[in-house]
Length: 79
Image (cartoon, rainbow, N blue to C red):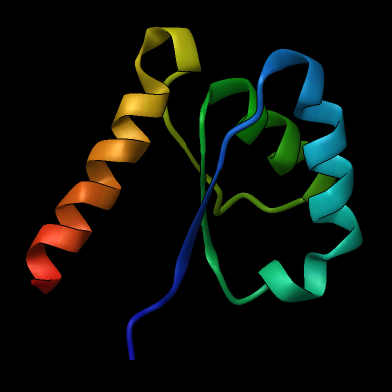
């Protein structure tokens, strides 16, 4: 069975809120592969103490597009 993945992206003034929400719901995220854009991923790694979070580039540097392309690739492969 394939590992399910979730991508987490937050705008600057929402990063803390996202990190807090994921922290409060760690049990739901424990079995998932997590992808995040730059700073969001770094903050999640530090706060969740998980070194398996895949950090893409920062949003302004193309991280959002990297995550979008990964999703588009997975969808295209499943069709």
